[in-house]
Amino acid sequence: MLKLMLKFVSCCRAADLRISTAEVLDCMEQLKLVDIHDEFQFKTVLRTNFAKSRMDQSKFDQLYHLFFYEMESNLSAAAEKSPEQLGMEAVIHMMEKELAGDDLDTSLMDFLSGNPLNYIGEVQAIHNREEKAAKALKSNMGQLSSRLEVMLKINRLKAGAVKFMGGNHANIDDSLKAAIENQINTRLESAYNLLNKEPRPDNAGLQKFSGREKHFNTIGEIPFSNLSKRETKEVRDIINKLVRKLEEITTLRYATNNKGVMDVKKTIRNSGKYLGIPIEIKYKNKPLRKGKIVTLCDVSGSVWSTARFMLNILYSLQICFSKVKSYIFISDMTEITEYFVEYNVNDAIKKIMNNTDINYNSMTDYGMAFQHFKNRHLNELDKKTTLIIIGDARSNYMNPQEFILKKMRERCRRVIWLNPEQEQFWSAGDSEIYTYKTYCNEVRACGNLNQLVDFIEALII
Image (tube, rainbow, N blue to C red; front, top):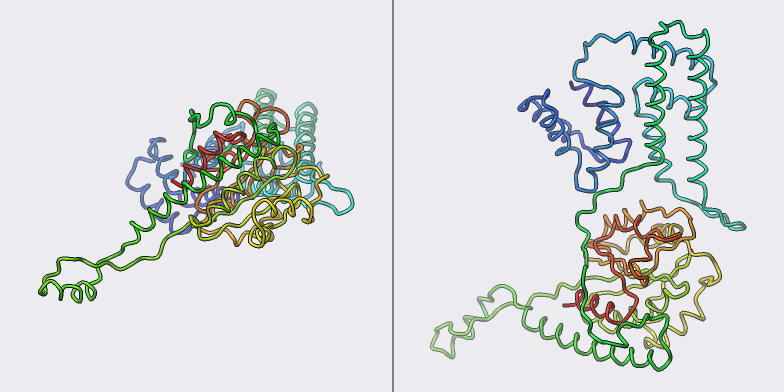
């Protein structure tokens, strides 16, 4: 049992599930308390110990099915091998002799033999591969080419299996050939699915917003990208009024809620004017707990029209936050916080459009932008940080590198994605919003004034 469990744990770790030695020992002790031949009890104990969160459960279920069903691992270590298993081992042994293989070929042969560990590690390395764009010619297809290379090797093994099963190489009973060939094809299909059909994590914490309030009837429903100069000025006036209102609300809230524990010394000292009776209780002031805001703004096309209004509000409401930091990107990323510190909002936006080193003619690439943020600014995120991403998630079919967004979510308090496109267009074309949605706490359509007011009030109030 222990040997079998250690093999399964090794496969889980190769697939990036974090499992400690203490958790393995706890699991073994708990298995003594249940009937391990009852699969529901057995799987529940393993799942409870090895899947840390809801987001890990889909990966765990995939690995459990692969290890205990498709690889036919069972709890009886002393079970005799069937003629079919012996015949399959013979075929795999002959294929290993005939086919020259590199490391990846070896991992596939191990996978066929019932040991998926090395292949799972290879696949996970491909899934987590960070793209490095060339300076001269931008290329973001490294992960895709790696997948294609593995797929070609899987097809090569399928052809090799047909060759051996159809020729005189396999010294096995003809009655077993069909069953062996079917099992080889089934395992190679499992290898293909591991490579190309990674299960999406279950994001149970994602907030959904079915309805919204109409704060403004006409101007509130016009997309930011369609506003005229007169309408833009009207929207800015409305935003300024909203900012003043929210500042008053938050200032009053902080003034009334900044009382901590009772201050005994001040209470006793103050009781002198009441003949020593502590009628008026004094409290210690406690420092305000303000969250941090980090914003990543896509500045391509119509997305920037939403981002500038969002930045306008956030920097006007800095009383509500301990720090606000902003970055803009198309494929590369640059920080623009200093512009809002030195200039007023409108002047800052003009200077950002003219003075930053962003190439506004480049193709949008969210995966590369996330990689630049991870390499340069990841330490800005902590458990007090709300990360706000403003963009349509249209990445020109480049590698989305969503695992980087997963790392960013693990470091901060929450991730909010504001999409200026309306939800009915999210699944069309090169949009990756449903890929990124898995790693966000909130995803909102935010393309007009009503939607922006809804979000700001939810964020502040």
